[in-house]
View 1 (cartoon, rainbow, N blue to C red):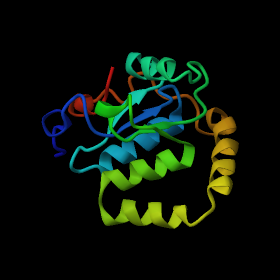
View 2 (cartoon, rainbow, N blue to C red):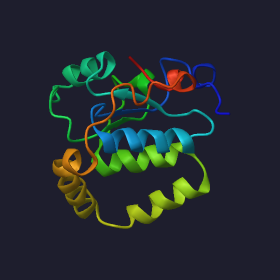
View 3 (tube, rainbow, N blue to C red):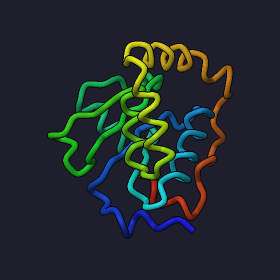
View 4 (spheres, one colour):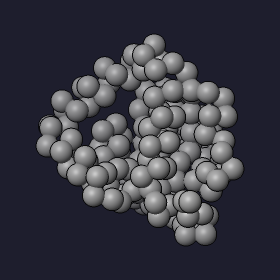
Length: 151
């Protein structure tokens, strides 16, 4: 049984990963990160949702282009702390979930230069809906996961 992140992570602090809620690959990635995150450190928000849309608008980021993920290291300090995108964000999310396997995978992937990693990320990003399909409506709506998501 996973810990309830609402009790272990105050609503206004901690890392948050903004992802494309309509993407099948993104939904799979979120499921894996939840499974890896035994201590409930990481929170999630679909880019189409209210919290992410406000974040994007406040920073002048695209509010309709969802070909990337955005990792916010501390949601409670999001006004002063920057964010990471693409593979840098994905690697940060892996690291924060804890566990030797997740940190080891992040370390191995990080050995590849960022320009190469992000090139592969963009290539997959342009094809992800054809390859992995659209995410299921309500595909992440498990009652035990409710505390992991911002609106």
